[in-house]
Length: 315
Image (cartoon, rainbow, N blue to C red):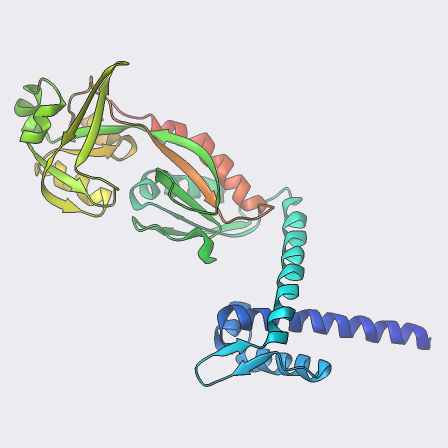
């Protein structure tokens, strides 16, 4: 009986130290007890108390505390390196376990560009929550890219050309870029012999793009023309550019999924349809990790079903 009690006490002690290890690692990584408590979802007092007990038990100063910041001592840095490895293995173990769950559950946190988010992600979220009622979705839709490594999201949908470093990605679709204008410009655009004439017409630039005033057109396998356009106005949101074009401000290049309905109804016209622009990709981007939760995999699979349809709608 005594041996059993000793084993139970030893197990409880190890469990307590594992928790303290997580608390300590959070303090080192965030630089403060307050930030660590916020990350862990507990009170600052609990974090401070448990780290202090860890130091007392092993009679080692792990942290240097000042009014502005908490930093690790040499012993603390060495201990944190081991802690980080152990905690990563623990997270991977839980992720692997979660991956075995066939039914997605929990809250999926994702981000996407505003225009693609409205036209494609919102319908996908609606279908996703219908298929998986145990899931909720928290979506951040913005033309300003959110760093997928920030810990705020589990999934980012990138439209265009990937610039994220140190992440994992999967292509889920593609889209066409279309030169469009309001019907009021139809006379002018019908008179265009080739893309060079676009430089003589007013253009609405989308500054969310890398180079919004230089475009490379192609026709067939060999014909190529590069054009520098005259921007009469610049905006940093695709939907705002589309509105300006709708109101007749000038021509612009917009993704097919953003203008498909306008082209079908005649609210916009496709300019120089015989000339094409480079195709863009639609990618699912993930933080670097060994395993993906079932909810993330299920949502990406759903997008792969829906994205090709959205990507190829158009004239």
